[in-house]
Structures are given as structure tokens and as C-alpha cells.
Length: 481
Image (tube, rainbow, N blue to C red; front, top):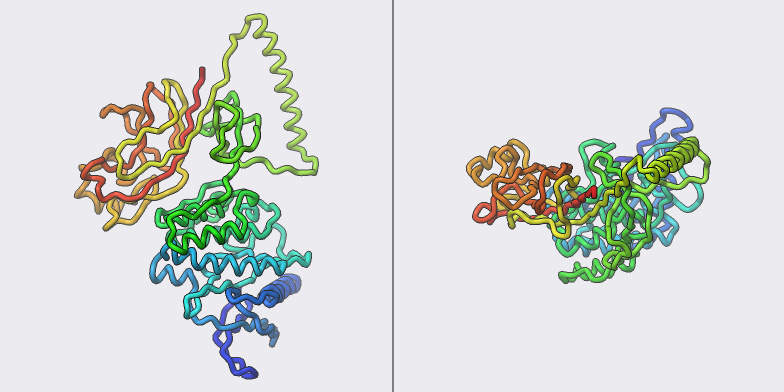
């Protein structure tokens, strides 16, 4: 949103940073909006006096150009630091996170949201302390919202899901962006970045974060901050307590609020490979017993409620009425013996951690029978088949060039046609059982009974001694009685 110059304040004889705002003149109204937005940026920062928030000294307009005069922070951004030196340790990341959390609390107390927390907007002073900067898209509580209809302003991969969905935002939205920032700084990769903008937006709104094993004890805190629902994220005080424990070198981040788990009754149909659910049940804290024999989790977002009557809703009710009528007719046919009584299918879902060093691993808690619909979805994690020489990869395995560089060990491959590092599945513990390539998602109809086993495309034993990392997957089995 601007170019920052090193300058000298002649009146007070001090070095400063002068940010020249990119005010384009493509129309009077657009220019007015951009100028007002720049003024808001200066006001937003000037309201906050905090050692970890960049200080604003002045706002200057000269020759149709607008400048914000700020304190000069002589140090790189976090984005530049990790690009030059690699990811930070969990302890170092947590220490900076505490400073940024303090800065955000000061910002929120002043009635301001930052709305663009990311590694590039965190500067490091010479003493390595963090400074939150670039409030270019901050929203104040003065009731003036300056963005054109449908325009998303900010860095998509660090934008909270509620902003992507057009829902109300608040301090929890900045905490989500902080979580994405910590994951990037410590893990070395953005957890939601995808090749295209629409894919990135979809990942932020619906997909689980791709988190590196490098996070170590920081991982539970990041996972809690990145929960899709703002109400399920930890408070600033809870997050600060956990971050301080990690910064102190403790292996456990301490207690964090449990996410809620929504319990569903299964529907009578399976669409594509998705678990379709209906009959929403009560919310219960994770880890507590659920009052039902079946645990299924919908991967689809819950529909947003609207107070406005809309055509699709009326159409839905019409279709529902038709379904009720059809159910009545079908019921009479059941009573007369024309149609056979058929039980609804049941779907059970579980989460499984697949280790890169353990060969084939059976999925616990689920049984598969012939004819069942089995779905395996990648959730998070990464691994490598040679931690000394090769980078980490995900469930799709290495690219062709990297895989070719491992030709000397190709006898270690379990599935020769698939790259090293690919997530594999089979439905039996026999050596000649068909092996499926899972990648990010696999759905198939079970041809036989047997345990479902998962593993990395690298044989166990001596082949896997230099493997590192794990993947987390979700497995669903739908059974038709």
C-alpha cells in the first residue's frame, strides 16, 4: 500500500520512516476513499502507545502526495528473517508471539482491529524485539467502513475465515491471523497458501491447516488459534499463558480450551465420497463421552442463517413438502408389503496419525466389511524419506525430479508407480493385497473384509530409518446393513 523511505526529521533532528501512500487518481471517489483510508491508518496507530506497536509522528500532504511519518525500525521483517535464515525455533517464535499478543491487546483496547497481521508486517528491532506495523487496512470503531462492495483487502492466506465468509469480525480475527503467522515463522510455510487465490480462500474457510512438525510444543497453541469458529479460539490471556510456557522451554503448552464436537445422525444416502449428515445434535466438549453410538463429523460448512426471505429457501420448503408426500406414499407401500423395509446406512469416522517410520499401520476404531464405502482424507502434517538430504513433502509424495534423484533406493518403494513419500492404503494385511494411492483423498468400495492399513511409500526396516514426520488423516466407513 505504499513505499517506505528512510528520512530525517529536521525539526526534531531524528531519523524517521516516511511512508508514501500509493494514492491512485483513477477517479475522484476512489481517490477520496484511498486518502481517507490512509488517514485512518495514521489515526489507528497514533491511538496506540506501546513498545511493540510502531509509533506514528505525523501525517503530511504535499503536492497531491500523502505521507505518514513513523518511527524508524532498523531491522528486517519476520518475512525477510525467515527467508534469509530459515524458520525460527518454537521457543523463539513463542517469545515473539507474546510481544505481538501484547501489541494486539493494546490495539484492541484502543477500539482498533489490525486486520493484516502477517510476517511481512512484523519488524524486528536491533535487540530482536518485535514491532507490529502497517495498519493500512485497520478498521476503527467509528462506524466508517471504507471498502468497496465485494472487495477483500488483506493477505488472503492470513485472513480469518469469518472475513472470507463475510461474517462479523473482532479481536479473535486478529488472533487467528497471529496463529497463521506463527505457523509460517516456525514451520517455514504458510498453512493455507495454495497456487491460486480461490483455492487459498477455500482452504482458509474450510480446510484444516497444514502444519509442520517443526512447531513441536507450539503446535497445540497454533491449532487452537486457527479454529474456524471465533468462539472456539482461546482468549488472549489463555494464549499468552501457553506461549510463555513454550518460550520458557517447557514441553507442554498447558491447558487450552477444547473445541466443541457436533454430533450428527447419519443420512440415508452417500453423495460422492463425502459423509452426508443430518439431524444435528448437541454440542459436547472434545474428549467427553458423546450420547450416541455413532460419531460422524460433517466436512461441509454449516449454512449461514439469514433473516431475509429468499427464493432458494422457499424452494427448499417446497421440495421438503414433496419429500414428505413421497415418504407417506412409500410408507403405505411398506405396510402393504409392496416395498421391502431397508435400514439406513451408518457412517463412522475417526482420525488417525500415520507415522513415516512404522510401515503399514492399521486404522484403529473402525472395521471394514465387503461393500462398505471407505473414504480417506488428508488433514495435516508432512514427512520425508531422507531427513538429511531431502525436503519434507505431503501425502502426494515428491515431485518427479526429486523422486528421480532417489532412484538409487527405488527398491525401497512399496508401490513402484507412485513417488516416494506418497500416502498409501490397503485393505488387508496380506502381502499381495491391492495397494491404493491415497494422495489428498481416496474413496473406494471395499471388495472384501479386512483391516484398513495406511503407510508411506517407503518400506519399513532399513529403508525407513532416515524417515521423519507424520500425517494426520480422517477415515470414514459407511456401512449399508
